[in-house]
Amino acid sequence: MIYVQIFLAFFIPGIIAYGGGPASIPLMEYEVVQRYGWLSAEEFGEVLAFSNILPGPIATKMACYIGYEVGGIGGGVVALIATVGPSTVLMIVLIGLLYRYKNSPRVQRLTMLVKPAIAVMLMVMTYNFFKDSFYHIGLPQTFLIGSFSLLLLSKTKIHPGVVLLAALIYGGFMFGLA
Amino acid sequence: MLEITIINVVCFYILLILTDLIITVKIGVSIISYVRSIKMCKVVSLIINKKLIYLFTAFFRIGILGYGGGPSFIPLIYIEIVRRYCWMTDDEFNNVLAIGNTLPGPIATKIAGFVGWKLAGFGGMLVSLSALVLPTALAVIILLTSMAALQDLPWVQGMRKSVPSVIGVMLGLVVYQFMDKSTKELGWLKSFFIFIISLIMIGVFNIHPGLIIFVIVAVALLWPVGNYEGEGRKN
Image (cartoon, rainbow over all chains, first blue to last red):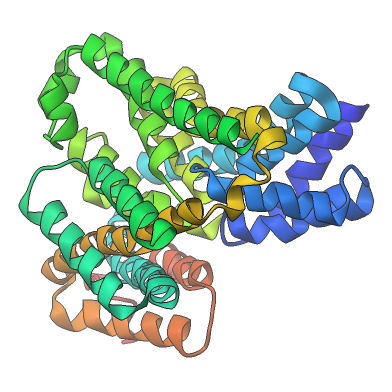
């Protein structure tokens, strides 16, 4: 019974939240705090803050932790499946359908027409990242880190993960200890 | 107490990176090519039976490097899946992003699940999803009790501040790729037309990008196919 509740609590935010993980968090809070009362609002905020400082997808981290708290290891697994499963299956079915007809002129037209819109979407995200960076560390540092990583990413063959790690260490020393 | 927590976290990270390194070396990739992001398409196609291990390491890496959820995974997935392993072409990645954005739910796991399924069926889907999600989900469970104090540490906050600009640059490079390809396929005029329209819709009217992409998908699929393959211009 508890597994059914856990499944529903994470299935509903996963299937109605539009716009990726961050959009599902308020809905998740409603289910977990208001409806089932597994956590208090403060505890939920704590889990959210903590999920934010570790890498990895945020919604799944939260689901796994809350599921585990409520129903043990089985609960964690159920919560993960409920968060990730439905949208993944839907995705595979739809893309599979698209691939079956990939030679049809309509699907080829779709691939071409949607590209500029995807570029805009990614551009807005890029803008938000830079805005975030500007807000936290100011223009000179944003420019410095940005141009340095642009140089490394486009002119050398260093793995982007290494660039990210270097930025993490730089940030820790520069903005943390100074 | 705080020192123990910090040591825990540092050890955890070192453990994650070491695991990744050991797996990489075990499947026959040198450490130099691990640090340098060399195209591994040929290597991967030669060792088909080790596809699952490659799949695991790729998404494992994406999962532990993506900082800040959601959008920060897109450039990492692009670099690993399209550039490094060639499991998808630019066009396929573009379609996956389009469909992924018109569907509800977390975006990174949708892409991961699909890539795994495409390469190795249901097992591949399970492998890629768990590689992406489990390492850090387990970390939350193991470390939460001792880590509440950690988020207030200055150097932890400092580390988070330098990441957005790097992710921004990575995403900007992906945008450049897409624009470049798009203008070659559609021509300057049409691609800029769609580009400007969507920019106004998203930037000025604050319409959710998923909705715009959904409309384009619907028009492209439903509009009658004539001899002229344009953006659905009326005769």
